[in-house]
Amino acid sequence: MGRQDLKVVEPTRQQIIDEFGGLDREIQEFAPKRKRYEILQGIIRSWHEDFPAAMPTTVEGELYIVQVGARTEERFFTLKAKAKIFSQLGKARALELFAITLKSVEDSLGKLALEELVSRAHSGSRKLVAVAKAPPAKLAA
Image (cartoon, rainbow, N blue to C red; front, side, top):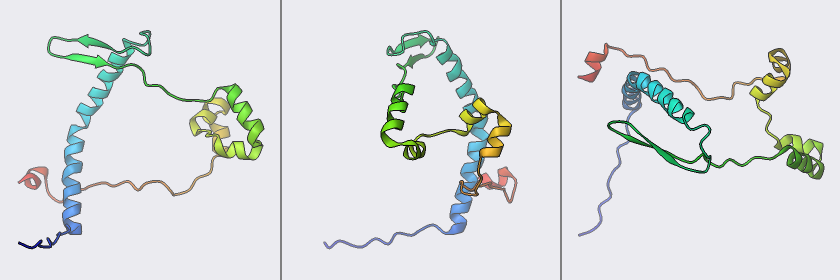
């Protein structure tokens, strides 16, 4: 028996739009649960702020045990290391490599200084908003 080529049927634009709209509706309906989940995560993590960073632990409720992992290891440069990089690479190249966040500038210099220094460009992602053409009950049918 020879191998048969299967024709892959790509969805139409309308099918993609309708699938996106349906998923968007479901995600919006789930949003309050997601928000509460994140709040509860923060509460549970706050119980372990003084717990040894490299040690995992558990907490128990009546129905569940939550495993609280060790803090993840983050890599960073100390001020001394940054100074060494700066001296080895030179001012211009070091400034290209160092990430200066908008938040850190605002926190350090203030909002007015940030607005004077910041540049803007329409280079970000486009926001997509699904608008139902019919009430949700008809869409689910």
